[in-house]
Image (cartoon, rainbow, N blue to C red; front, side, top):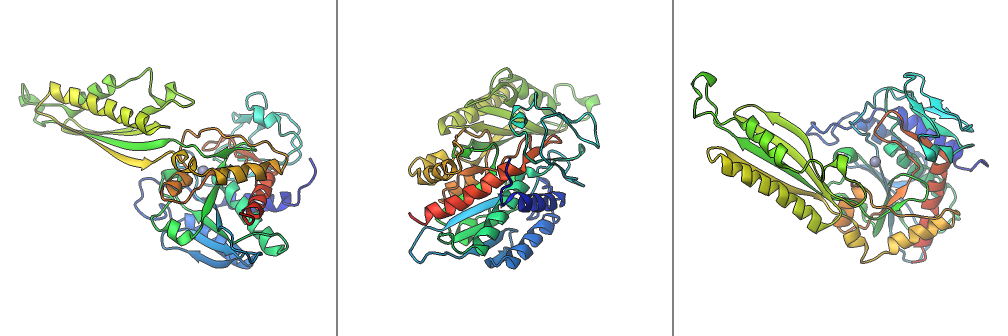
Length: 415
Ligand SMILES: [Zn+2]
């Protein structure tokens, strides 16, 4: 594979950023959820200032903002590029040792710190397509954090290019690096107003060519069961055991359908992800996911009906089911104006890469931003097997993503 002008810069940036521990913590009430995310946020502030970006700021809600001034005088839309600095709490992000496998030869990659961790091209067909690329992996005991330090490196490389080569025509560009995307707290209420952009893109997607404008619609549900607590020695006809009622609710919910482990594609699910309590009181935490509003509502109704039915069997208990909205499928807003996706596809084809769009069984910061009025599709970075020890990425995919952003900046200046 010929050496792209961005390859070495991306390798340097990505490896440096990946070494910094930025694991998010859902249990923490602070913003960012972990103060170590400031290690990377502060570094990005310094690097953006050094490259000549303007309005560089770290907001009190932990987002780095910056401007790349326009090179054209005509009035054009302001385009924002975003990436998140945190990594998933689902696997350790402490002591990440990125390993660059230059000019990948197509063989299986054994990770040195745990030899049971093997990336084989047979098991991961996308890896088989990357022979000759420079592949970055972790060492076996941590995730890599390409999700989303690849996005951070891509946006920084784009910024460096646009600020150092003022012959590239583009309108005003805004940059944002957000914390806590992985725990669904990346988009602060003030972010759209502080970004001051007309359109935005997150660099948080996967395979080369992927342009995502459909995400799940998401609700959260908490079922609280209040039983009647009494000494078990004197409990006859009086104890109402909250744990037994919790078990009944779980057992009545659909098991062989409508769970994450039994659905894919466009199917939705009800996922029990946490339970806690004792005989006196218990809490069940669920996430509900579907691509359509109606489907999501139907899942909420299933859960509510099951709670009502179990309540009816034991009037002395108190069972409540509280459903709160998390985010909505960005397609609902983007389908009214597909220009952000059309231009992304055009920018992708200009690289010789055929774009494709698949609905994401998850959400992005863009889901919330789009709902708040800032259309924000998600673009590929190349990241694979994220949130686990077998995470890997091709530097050359990241270089294509950097070029995609630069093409997009140019295309929007003609709108
Ligand atoms: Zn991500």
